[in-house]
Image 1 (spheres, rainbow, N blue to C red):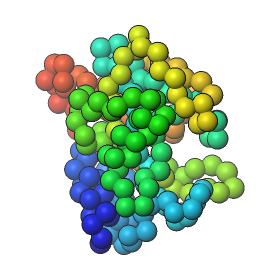
Image 2 (image 1 turned 90 degrees about the vertical axis):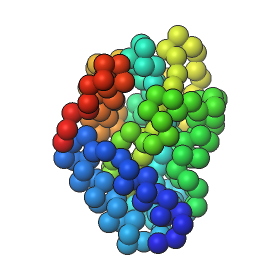
Image 3 (image 1 turned 30 degrees about the horizontal axis):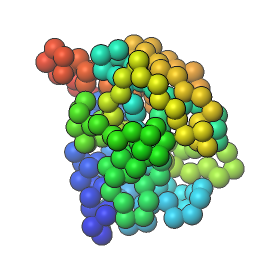
Image 4 (image 1 turned 90 degrees about the horizontal axis):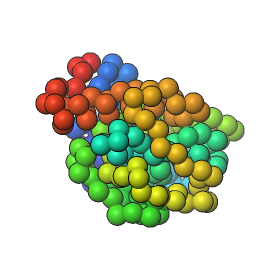
Length: 196
């Protein structure tokens, strides 16, 4: 395992699973990382057919809201973020994507620089592939106007964290919101996150 893949494996191994499906995805991701160093997208859209993504979820903890964009290519309400470049650390991807797609310097003070969540998702369409996504939290403010990169997103909208069913979004978004809700409760009230 090369240094870049080892760094990703350390990140993945440090994520506390929220539920049985996330544990399954973490185990699958660790087995995949142990089997190959070809984990970064080299050619758009699907080479190799499984590769890393860093989601950057803009969260206002006080307002209990997240900002999503209407992704032009996917046709879904998604967090900002993107593919991890070859050899790039996923945290650097999150910083880069926050600047490129939201126009901000990422503030990771909600839960720190470790991703909150990990998912493996098979994309739709002719060039279907697996995205292994690391979900990073970045602090934002609902009252502030953010303009997402118009090349990637056609609209932006703040969604309440308590609304777990967001139409036309990532298939794991409801589970992400549930984990985020528990993480925010733990910070506010000292309540531990729900065990798997």
